[in-house]
Image (cartoon, rainbow, N blue to C red; front, side):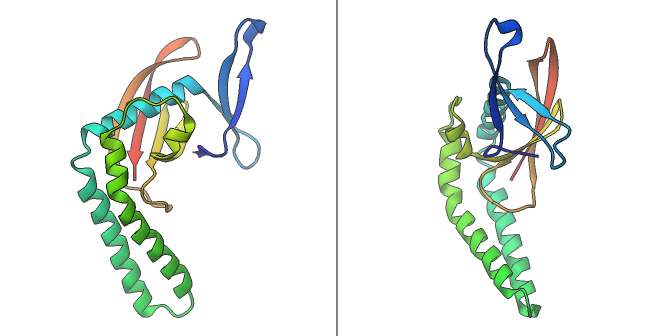
Length: 173
């Protein structure tokens, strides 16, 4: 799992000829290093967000239905909870704030144009998970919790290392 906040940025100089910006991330045991060029990550994110823009009319209903369902579950848990009410109320507050952010997020998606700055991507994407070299999961920055609801699955052909390769990505909220 790679958060856009915790990637290590380096410049790779193969044979000392030119510079390639690379993002590195390790798992908790400092093993299984994953790397992706910045340009490829940006291509994947731009393609994914362009596809989300095409289905933006469906998003408000999907997002608000998801938030409402989670709020209803928390209300049910609050009726029977004795010890973890503070955690539940905190989660409820996060969801209510997320519900307030939906119109702004939808407006950003509707006005989306390909980006080339990580700060701009952070407004729309909260997490990128690299499952394998060719499978990615992109979590939109709407509901900031551990759950995810799949909204789109697509592929993109990229030059990875020395060959063309299909990259598959899933977009979640």
